[in-house]
Length: 280
Image (cartoon, rainbow, N blue to C red):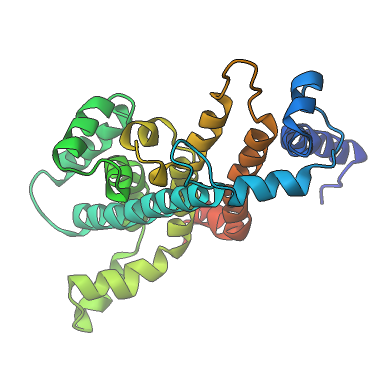
């Protein structure tokens, strides 16, 4: 049996501290006032303005309309992240199911055509996507924020590989029991795919949550602003001698890290299992 050495623990601890340092610095800096941060820069020492800062960014109305709060932006980011992740899982599972289990000509070609969308990220097709959403009247809507992000083959690729590893005996047993394609999908494949769904959900939620460029183009109505847009808008405020609210920007950055971290912590076991398991 391998014996753990103290040096191994030391390396792991130092690595963890190194990764946590930016988060700690951001949180500690957010507890100071904007004037203190402007004068002294970022700090690792706590201040006495934490409660006031976080209460302000979550509850105080602001923006150009004076109606948006940090809590509203958190909700918008959650809708974008969860909607994108769930939509990606549903579409990917249905596409992979059709490719693997339905016998039709050019199925392999269809998969590789879908797979080539990985070569066209949103940044490449952003203007055509924006034009389509504008013509459909989906600007400043949650549908306009979520639907264009679904067009990629990431989830389809993972679920296709997963479905191909499912034993054919399960399909034959389902047929003998009189299960049709829909029942086989719902009663057999979906329960088997729970760990894979959890892994894809985490990846897609973090990707959707961190979106900045697409929400910036799609939303001019502040009621649809996400948390990432809120951080940027705070730092853009520099009029005359007015100091940007650095403490609020750091507070929003800390808040922006919490949901992805919670999702990863909650689904950690399923995430690892979904990416590594091969036995069904």
